[in-house]
Image (cartoon, rainbow, N blue to C red; front, top):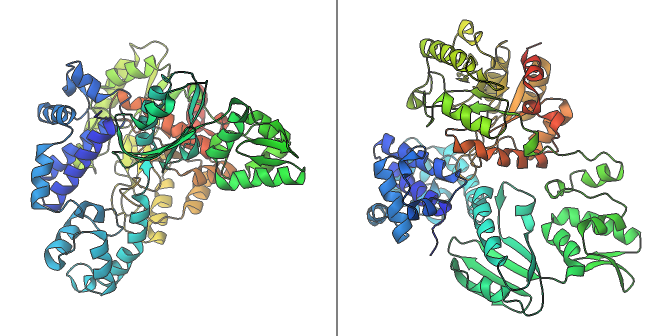
Length: 573
């Protein structure tokens, strides 16, 4: 069986969850989580690195012990350490941590006091009002748990885009080798670059006598073959992802690609326009009576209903049809438009590489600048910088910039927004920087009113530039904190601040909805990676995908600017 990066990530995440439930050493737990995060963002296969005998300790967050465990996973497909822990603690417990209001300590209490070991047991305990009687819970927590169970069950049916990407790329590469294969492309929510993906839909055009269906059902990652026909097959991979393959005629390929890309609401809107023109639009083509008049390409389909081509990321029936009809479609930002990354960590705190190393990698990507944004002192677990260490880093950056040609390292910091809205470092130190990236890393459970006021109070500081990962969410792991995003967007507009779209695939924070709202309010967005290693700089594509879904063009994005223009924008009004 092939071992994907996502398999290693899943094992390390599960191990970290189980250790945390057991109350293990928090530094060990953090080491597994950091390793999982590092591997999730890698552009190369870790299994291939193992097979080539490469040094895994060169990867961020991977020491000798973790490297040995990765090698064990690649060689055996499992990890003995995890099996050992699962023998002592039911593995179903970790799914309970996906429920809002439940962390590892509460999972442990629920298990030990009430015997709750899965979501169904949790539901029954809440419905019988047993949870409110436990110390540290109460009636409100019990209700919050009940409300969160449905969300946890729904999230469990989808995977993050980064996981789907690894699976899809591998499958497309495999199927493209089929005899007679002309086109192989992934459609569905994956092609629309949604944050999470359910089933993976693959379309293919093949010549006579193709063996693509046999290649598909015999793919080494397949666990179950659900159906196997001449033009359609469905399988479930051992990761639990269902994949459907359809072979379509070349003259219908564009229509099928449009149909299976979706969204459903967008397709209905297009078909409705077609009906008004006496046309039938379906997966086989565009028909005038019984005659097919389009279908070979998506452009043909749109042309027949009087519309220009609409990018897949925009197809959510959120005004794109009207905008296309009126000539107001945005030209979505591309990765080539990005001139720099404004949220990058180094080994001065919890990053893997030096400033010089990260700058070198950014230069290879063709960037003009990066901002070094190591944590401020409040984040003690990451070894955050106090004033003295940050001033020393400023001097180090000045020395490095004196040796670089055509590239600038911006002096910055990821400074914590404290509970009272003050920033974690004094103004006289922040004044030495080119910009600040300001973040909430604590007190996520404040009320909506208090959380919103806290952040807006921080924005009042003249040295506040960019609000990092504005809702604090981790996809499928941590819900966003309760905050009034409309109020934050308006406050940013009034004060000349900016919002970050954190492009790490675990975050993708802002949402596409909030990106569009910020654009409409005239608030520019910084698409950043929150890189903790050189490899993380490659995650910029995920931020760009999300920006495109949020209707952002290059003009809406802060770091598409040349350095001179960027610096002008960073000057607070």
